[in-house]
Amino acid sequence: MTDTTTSVSGGCYCGKVRYQAVSVNRNVIECHCTQCRKQAGHRYATAASTQAGVSIEGEGVISWFRASDEAERGFCSHCGSHLFWRSLTDDKMVLLAGSIDDDSGLRLTSHIFVEDKGSYYDIDDGLPQFKGYDTPHQPD
Image 1: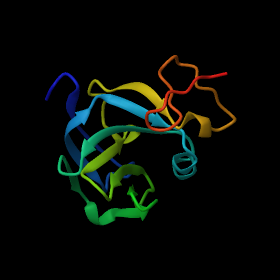
Image 2: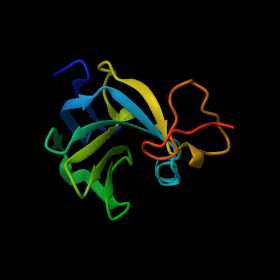
Image 3: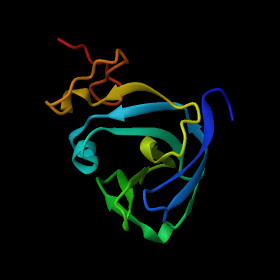
Image 4: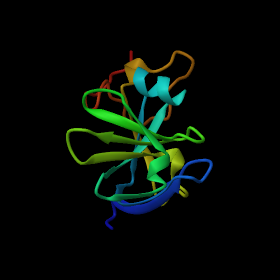
C-alpha cells in the first residue's frame, strides 16, 4: 500500500456478501447526481479501486443493475445494501464507503455533480465541489 491507498474489507448489512479490496484510494468522493441519489436515497460516498483488486464472497447474492451504457451498480439482493459501482468500459470499481468495515484512513475529499444535489440539504463542509467529475463549481 502507499500513502494514498489502503486495503479494506466490508460487506452488506445482513452479512451474505463480504469483500476484500486492495489498493483502495483513501480519498472518498461524494456524488450528488440524480441517479446516485435516486438509487441510494441520498448521497453516494465512494472509494475507488479496480475490479481486479476486489474479491467477493457471496457473489451469487449480488444483483447488478445496469445504470447506463458505461456502468452497473451492485447491491445485496437479500438485504438491499448498496455495495459497488463498476465500469463496463474499463477496470474501475468503487466501493460504497458505508459498506466498509472501518475507516482504514479514508477521508471525504470532494463532492461531484453538486448542481444536481437535493434541495433539502446544503454542502457546507468547505471541501472542493465540482459540476461533474472535474469541472470546478463556483457557488453563487
